[in-house]
Length: 114
Length: 114
Image 1: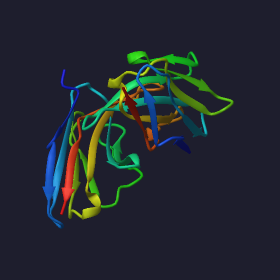
Image 2: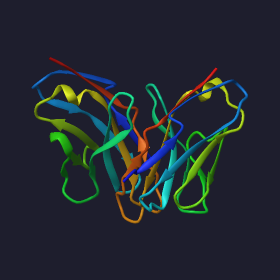
Image 3: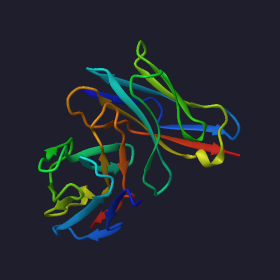
Image 4: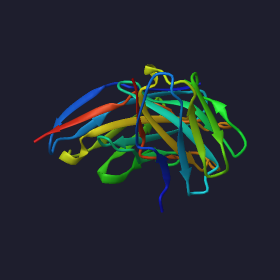
């Protein structure tokens, strides 16, 4: 059981380049999320998808776009990378059919923008 | 609106001594509360969760937390620290109303010395 799988694990981009982070879950969860983690800031929500076909902005959406490709997959795109987007990115999924559904996290993507 | 405050950015203990990581929350509705742990360069793992049942919640690896509504607190404790407990710990809140995402605290780094 793979859970939540993110690719790539590491990436270095030059300022202005674009890239897409991929995420897939095999737990048949309805909801998926993208977070970024920066030192001393905890995890901050970038975008989320409550269910297939919907996406919504989180706390820090500027500079990002997302696509919920199907129930399993949720991608995050940086159209023109900036050094401020250097971070560790986590994808997560949850069931959300009941109160208190926890989120399951991928292993993260460490992105450096130079 | 929901928010979480982790009162200590770093906590240092000696192996075999008790651990206390403090968390206060704010929520407009009854909350679900979680503690996650992140070991270096790893993803996040759920330690325990509170979802309006028993106020004392037991988790993995000997950790437990007590929900205190009057104090809006959800502190994490362990009677005896082990070297393998050294990691970053995140307190997380989600409101039990409509669709609510997870809001993370900024994290507490637990350091365990021999």
